[in-house]
Length: 262
Ligand SMILES: Nc1ncnc2c1ncn2[C@@H]1O[C@H](COP(=O)(O)OP(=O)(O)OP(=O)(O)O)[C@@H](O)[C@H]1O
Image (cartoon, rainbow, N blue to C red):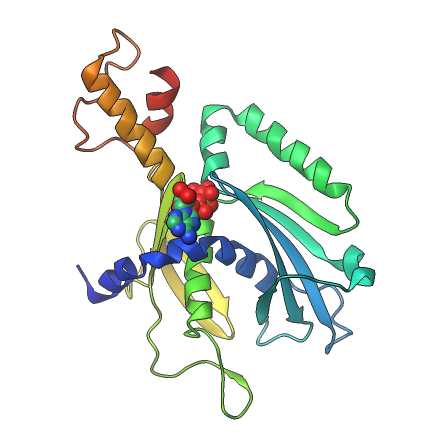
């Protein structure tokens, strides 16, 4: 295994940061509407709709930008009530909703529509609710890890935000509830376009490999294991005949069939 990938595996704690990655990406890369107020603080809200829980995060950033990418920080509270209507608000749903969409796309659309309707009633600038792709989720986790470790941008002694020299960018493993993502800089061109991601952050280009394994999050993996064990003990006569009786490997899209049909 290449050293970079090993380090990626070592950074499995990125799982806990994945949710922040969603927020960092949405706010960092979305241009502020009012660029005429360079020194003003702006705020943004992000709902992270995961498979196990939904969190709401508040972010603050200066309206001035660093090479087209902002510097953001997470805050516990925001008391600037007159800015509420200018506060961009997003909802990003992850693997739980990707899984529901595979099982029943109409239901998934209904859930998103209901959620969007509810958030839209609040006095914020609601910019939409959507399901992130696995590649996006993985990439945002990667940005989060490297942003927090200051491998993308660092505040220098000269009191300027600078691209750090001689600092290795790390890979990220994100273990969610319903999916797992791996994202790293392969150092060679990525042949499969479905796993290739390109970012320009703080004036530097990054070419990444990112892949999400749906159903290989903690909760779904446990469900697959329990369903397979159940099959071993009580084989179902018809619907689950294709399911192996040993947990050597379960094909990727099998988790839905495992616990829906069995
Ligand atoms: N601090 C923690 N310590 C231990 N376990 C945790 C911690 N935070 C989350 N988990 C567990 O890790 C699993 C994944 O949590 P996570 O918040 O990443 O999932 P999610 O965002 O809801 O799911 P997904 O991203 O797959 O839609 C859950 O089973 C959760 O209980």
